[in-house]
Length: 175
Image (cartoon, rainbow, N blue to C red; front, side, top):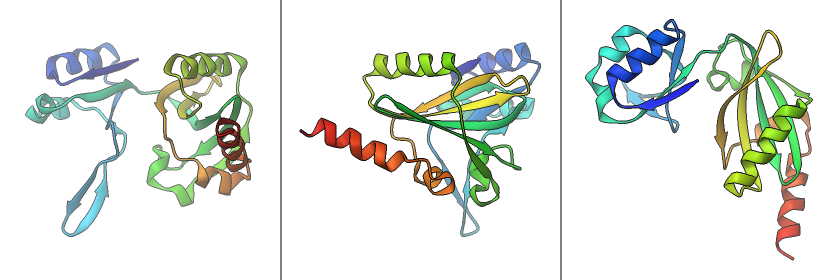
């Protein structure tokens, strides 16, 4: 379940509906400089105090129901090929610690593959990277779609032939 709003009352109602089991995410990566050092904004649990902050009114915020996950999956779609990589992170949000994460190629459930094909067709995309959280029942929860999502680090960690698929796709579309 996802809510995009800049209205604190709507965000509070959403959080209450989900028993405060909600996280806040930025739309794009944000780096804040404090004391000369860069700090990134990551997925953050929502608290009542966060929603009391008047800054919520100034821009749209993305709130999502928190998934009790075992791991994440980045699904890289290149043309008609799909590369699914499990990401196991000790930090929860895998972007906090790329070097401490473990990665493994995995299978895409049929219903997820069908849904992704439909989504890509709807948006007219030949490439995208989608992020999923996988719960204890192995259910995949769609989090977001990145039409220019990063993938090279996953190929490096797993040897999945994503570069080859991108090159093949580009070669087919330039003839």
